[in-house]
Length: 107
Image (cartoon, rainbow, N blue to C red; front, top):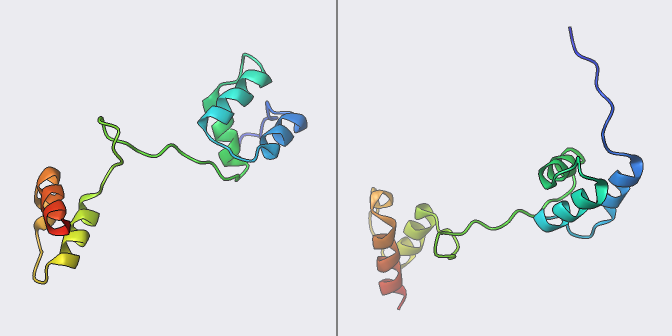
């Protein structure tokens, strides 16, 4: 037996406040949650944004040092542009080695 859908915690005015924001990100979600009341969190607002199918800008993934995350597949593809030949298995090399090879070939 299906459970009946419960009513939303969000009023029409709250939903409109979410829609009125030009950019939806973590900071905006936290600010909206604070304005909606103590029972709302930023994560709850982000879930509501997703359920409303509105565009949400996630934070870019960064490494411990603050550099952007580089995928090994993309590093191998960059190396392949410089080198002609069979590069099968190169994805299994350590990422620092791939970055050093790419930088040496590019420089």
